[in-house]
Image (cartoon, rainbow, N blue to C red; front, side):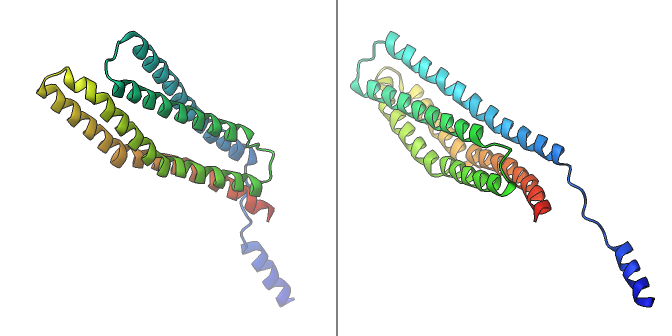
Length: 196
């Protein structure tokens, strides 16, 4: 009888696993996914506007130097690269169904996270270098038409802008994405642990 009383005491003191509210978790996952989709869609829209703006300026301003035409072509190609990359990301997010098993969903999310990390680090460096070359080529014609003060201001602003984007905004952008990814992984792991 003593053993039975000990078992009852152990059983009563043992904590039960908290119940997981699947609806709330799926709602949070959908919200996080929609945040990604909105962020990507806004960037996509901005790049479409940039391509249209560059194309408009290219057609109405009679540029004299070949370097300027080459720089505008580089700008358009950079924008198109960004557009196609973001369309690919939207498709990946659109194909990631919530009807998958938690384990499969985690695997898909991890591969998407690695893809985004590669885009936000290595590809961003290449993208920035190509844009810098484009600005350098554009400045050839621009600097022949302005005084030294405007040249120094333009160069200074461009260098400061690239530096701030690379050393500050890129880090902030990556941290924000990491925060969203981590919240999604936490939710999926809570669901996965219930099935194990």
